[in-house]
Image 1 (cartoon, rainbow, N blue to C red):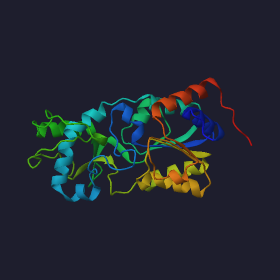
Image 2 (image 1 turned 45 degrees about the vertical axis):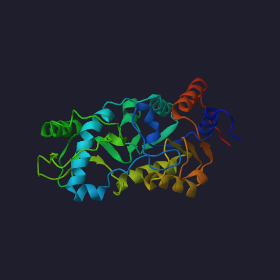
Image 3 (image 1 turned 180 degrees about the vertical axis):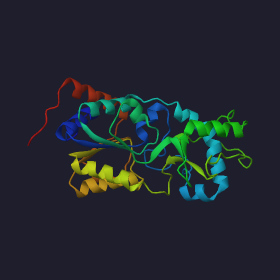
Amino acid sequence: MPSTEPHIDLVEFIRTHPRLLVLTGAGISTDSGIPDYRDQQGQWKRAQPVQHPDFMRCEHTRKRYWGRSLVGWPMMRDAHPNPAHQALARLEQLDHIDLLVTQNVDRLHQRAGSRKVVDLHGRSDQIICMSCDYRCSRDESHQRSAELNPDFPGLSAAAAPDGDADLEVDFSGFHIPDCHQCGGILKPDVVFFGDNVPKLRVMEALNALERADALLVIGSSLMVYSGFRFCRKAQEWNKPIAALTLGKTRADDLLNLKLNAPITPVLQAALNVLSSQPCQTMTD
């Protein structure tokens, strides 16, 4: 029977399953000021994000994406890890986390101190050419874009997920920076909707799940299959699954423990208990 204090249930889950695979989603970064995609019912809060096929074939889609990014990227770039990120980094140091797999592209887990991290959907701070091996930092591309479009950096709009912004203007005259080496299409090194997660990342995460005692999901609705697949596989392998997230998840019927509670205070309270009372590994 769950207790009335979610952090106590989380502590018990971690102590009972000392080697965890942790999967995080957008909900863990909202306290850093980065908006999430979905509401507590798992529905989109705004129009769906850019689709990979549209980005690759439609110049107007690219103009709109990069124009909005001139406003949205600085808000994401300047975000700081919050106490939830820091708590997971500390849990890794205490040997509770074998691997952290994140659906986020903000790199806040690494900046908080986590070392064993798989960026399932890539990283937004790097840019790649879709035609050659050219790479550069997002800030370098951002600066080039600002120089080509001096009227855009002064615009303002509400932040949207993953470096986007709720900016609606005429993008027809926007100038897109192209690849220095071949003139090809530049794109953030992230997996857009409609694209596939690289197989090596998936295999690294699945190998860790196979080693793990349990799966802990934090801040994800799991509506996207790239994350939900790990719950399906955990069930297949008889690995217990816990979720700490506000609202509905796609895996609710697979969960052994559902903590529908604010992420940061629960993680902080659980960490305080685990830090002050050394882990008593259960052997039966």
